[in-house]
Image 1 (cartoon, one colour):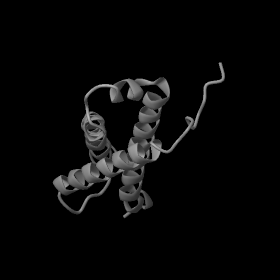
Image 2 (cartoon, helix red, strand yellow):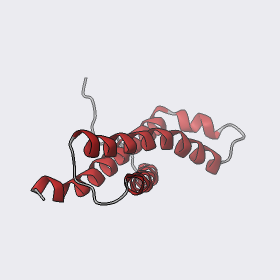
Image 3 (cartoon, rainbow, N blue to C red):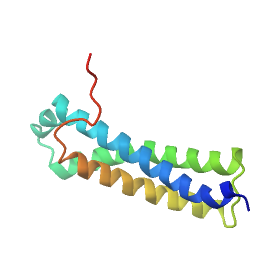
Length: 119
């Protein structure tokens, strides 16, 4: 096994977790700072329904992103895999949903975006 083959499972998980966490956290925070969530909270929807809707919406895109990252690493880059690709996808989906939940949770406590446009 080469160094790439031994590190590729770690890198696949790191990329999936980092990108999902970053996209979910920044998007949810941008919704909050833009006032969209305050307008949604004025509707008769409950808080858990709004969070469940955001999680379901982002969950579709994070699932697609996880499948693309795992497929690219195994199919295109030729990363060595000893087990079933189905297990890789399942673990990637669980990792992505965990990152989505963590990003949504932590963005609820943030006051500003991590990167600001100064223009």
